[in-house]
Length: 476
Image 1 (spheres, helix red, strand yellow):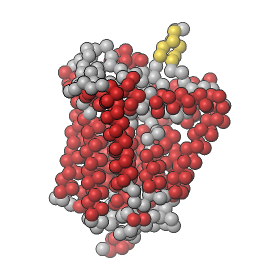
Image 2 (tube, rainbow, N blue to C red; image 1 turned 45 degrees about the horizontal axis):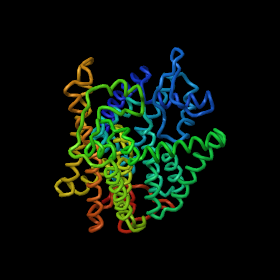
Image 3 (cartoon, rainbow, N blue to C red; image 1 turned 180 degrees about the vertical axis):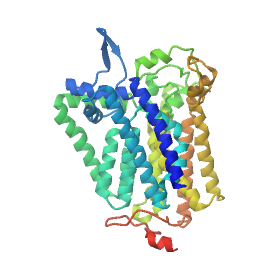
Image 4 (cartoon, helix red, strand yellow; image 1 turned 120 degrees about the vertical axis):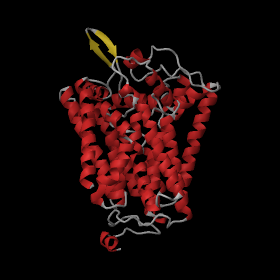
């Protein structure tokens, strides 16, 4: 069984590699943004302004608007290479990150025999296969971010708190949302991990940017980033500006704009003018069931997000040494899920970050038993995650040349615009929270994992279970 599952993972990975390779050869987004961002910095010593010179004319295109300057600095390493070579190298990095993530989850967090990681992780991977397809097709940076996030937690659980903070700091530099995990470590009173993460962000981010770009350019870059991401690019800012509200954006703010404002979700592909030109010329399509003042919708979304953050802090307020292994793992997985909830621009490929939660839910079903009422909720959540990926199929099934107005494509876009993918995030979060409440009332509801991280100095020991030695478990 182990060999068969490993072979299945290999076949699916080869399919993903083939997909990514075809889009690299076509010089298609999103890797184009990363490569050209690095190339502009390498060749001009400045951040990418977002245009190409084609036949003496300026052609606008997408840029790395949402990313800190550290990302184009990273991509400038690839910019030494021709586009195709750099693309296939980056694709290789993503494949290594994918397998590294699956292996870390299976060997360290599932609580099952480490050598069986291909068996325990195949189903969670398949449940998100449609999202992995888009991640690899666009050659995005989310796989590497996920590896750093998972590597950070597994390092912390095995007692390497400083290394855990270092990996987490790098993840924050690639994507801002892992900062929620820094908050979680602080709530667990893991000060070394929190301090190292913050130090890594400062030294590898602003301090390195000052050295690489110079004071004036670095200050201008961060000032522009704050404006684009934290002001106009926030949930509230996007609602007021009526941008990034097309059907692809699964964020809570965009979803509220489509439900409670007369928002045409067939336009405003604002991240790339070429995409707007290709897809934004169709007939207007609306979803709103009510029309509220724009300020009211913005305040409503802000209130929901603030309430979610307060609830998360309250739920995870207890220090690590008072919690069991399962409670710590599930709290961490919930934090990773909420990274998706708080994103102002969430695309379908970001859903690969649900992998830790799905992997731990599968492990929880194994330990609780398939007939337990919590397991029924978990199985229902996982079934919805699989069913919603039907949304992704029409664009692959529709015959080439059928056009964007094909009935299947319209149906898929409507479901996506309605928030089907974000609903999966919410239901998964509710399921994980239900398990945490169950464990808070009955700490022995899930038996201590058969296999877990090896205890080392500095490991935060759980209050009501222990790190079971494999020999003892095998004997039992």
